Length: 192
Image (tube, rainbow, N blue to C red; front, side):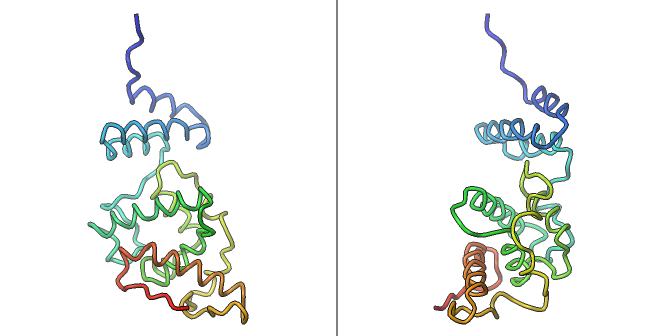
């Protein structure tokens, strides 16, 4: 006699009994992998939302802090995919990007409105990435680079002899802008 396969609903129900996001994360990962394996990512996302008891952002439900271009359709879908890829890159350590750098680029490239707060930004990004715990974006990096909303990374010096910190931040933002180029309204031209 063999045990029957475990239904996803059983996994969801069991995961909901866990008290913290950390305890629920393995179940979220399991549900996501199974949904991908079965080619049912949307259904998996719905199950993950129930486990995390959070509102997830999707292309039909983009927050008001996004410019209109990014609030629906293909641009919204592309942006969500790119944000998830950025999260994977940041988590893996393959890049020196931080979420404050991403926020700076999103504001300067007119993806996010300049009046978004860091706490709201954390909520938005975490809601775009299934299973991402709240405050993980807000606590990743130094948000001083986004404090002056009248500033732009494109105005920062690129010569590290003049200001090495600002030149490094500009280079990181340029890399992120290049990565986001498929959804941007302009082509990214990087100069040395």
